[in-house]
Image 1: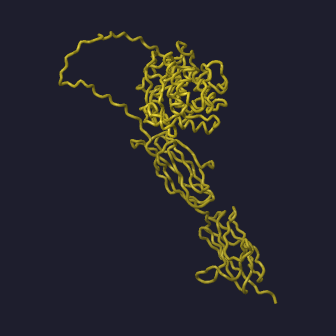
Image 2: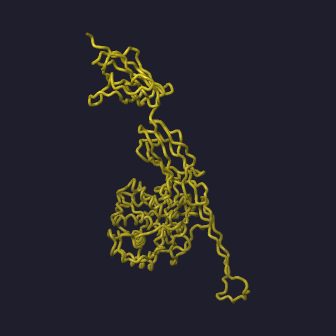
Image 3: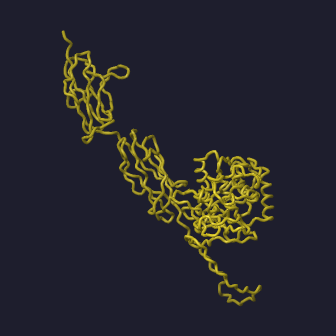
Amino acid sequence: MAAQFGRRLRRGATTTAVAAAAVAALTASQGPGSPLVASEGDQSNQPTAGSTPSGDGAASGNSPYFTDLPPLNTPNKPGTSVNLPVTGSAESGIPASVLAAYKKAQQAVAGTDAACRLPWQLLAAIGKVESGQARGGRVDAQGTTFSPILGPALNGQGFALIKDTDNGAYDGDSTHDRAVGPMQFIPSTWETWGQDGNADGRKDPNNIYDAALAAGRYLCAGSRDLSLAADLDRAVLSYNHSDEYLRTVRTWFEYYNRGTHEVPDGTGVLPVETSTGTHRDVDTDTPRTTPSTSPTPTPTPTPTPKPPAKPSPTPTDPSTPTTPPPTPDPTPSPVLAAVQNAGTGELTATAGDAFAERIKVRAKSDRGTPLAKVSVTFTVVGDTDATFDGAKSTVTLVTGADGTVTAPVLTAGEKTGGFSVSATATGTSLPAVTYAATVTARQADAIARTGTAELTAVAGQTFADVTAEATYKGAAAGRVAVTATMITDGGEPVENDKGPYFTNDDGDPVRTLVFTTDADGKLTLPKIYADGAAGTYKLRLTTEGGATVVIELTVEAPAA
């Protein structure tokens, strides 16, 4: 697999020797040990039919690739020897979107195939060899290359022979297949392994997030454990079946393992063109178009006479500037700058109810314009049992054309009090937007005693059961807190220290207790003991929400 921009590096004896020398220098001290698996005869753990693509037994159809090598003095990763010089800083830089895609792919694969132990540095090594990190990071805000990256036609003339498998849908060639995108998948491989890494609903081989995730899953095919040198070698060989390719990828893998850093998109270092091979990919200034199903013949250009080898100098006016005007840089694509509250109102709900207000976020670019297709993660934070639809505490969605995205319905649990919801741009370090939310207790606006019999008891005995029912707006008020208090007479009654009483868990007399109505809003109080002098006493029931009812209790003197 290989991206072609300008002249392509072709496999050759010179680059093979350089690669071998560099690998020999690195292998002598590398941690895991890396015996190179033979490219012929050892097909164990290779992708198999049913779970793997066709295409000459390799994800790329064994198309060309860049054979540049990193500096022999690799970056000094924190924690390594302090005697290593820090060199090759430009080569160790990976464009921001490309680096983010590799790391996101590593996390995604770890979530479904942790045993594979996919390192993002391996994706970076393959991306460097295949396309120079998507042409130095020439991608838009969603990670899609400004124009397709296409390898040469795999027509058997110096490359593998792979006849068209997609009718030109991915590569625009209806005669032969071509490797496509920053990770250089041939169409038949992409058809099997293509992924939607940026959650935009499409599987695009020219999108670095999609391509990196597809490459990660392809490398993890079967039961591979990429922390084992032999499995890692087999995985790389399954991508492009060449010993030189393996050595080159291994060299960059070790280089990136020693340290790397993020550089702005579009500023990555492109491979040096020292090969004798010349292959051309899609013009980087040509807009993306849908390829036709049949190729259009290219007319033979009329030869242009060559100018003289040493043209005679032309007199110039010394006062006329000879410096050509600078070429303007292409206008960069908008970059995500922030996520903001898009007008979310107060978040308040009664326990067990859904919040009427929906949380809404807007993504803004560095130009202040709305930004579509931005992944936003909403997370419920704090001591609460409130959740989004589906009992989820975290959900990730993508902004629409107007740059906004609305979270699912939030439902309050049984825990009352405050908590928060955060909204972050997924995979970025941009500040989160935080929304305060409150769950209030269920309420009742009315409560009444059920039953009409007088409540009378002889001192020292117990009253008949006291029952009540609470309602809210005419409907049963289930799970509402009710406070029962024995009160005094008077304009401002307080808790009575005499007369009837309840008992607590220890059997001690108490004259105030809190209960909760059942799902139907009904309540049965525990036993009430008659005590004190004969007379009439009062029991007050008060609901959460302020509804009250006062019930009379009569204590009679014992019989003579």
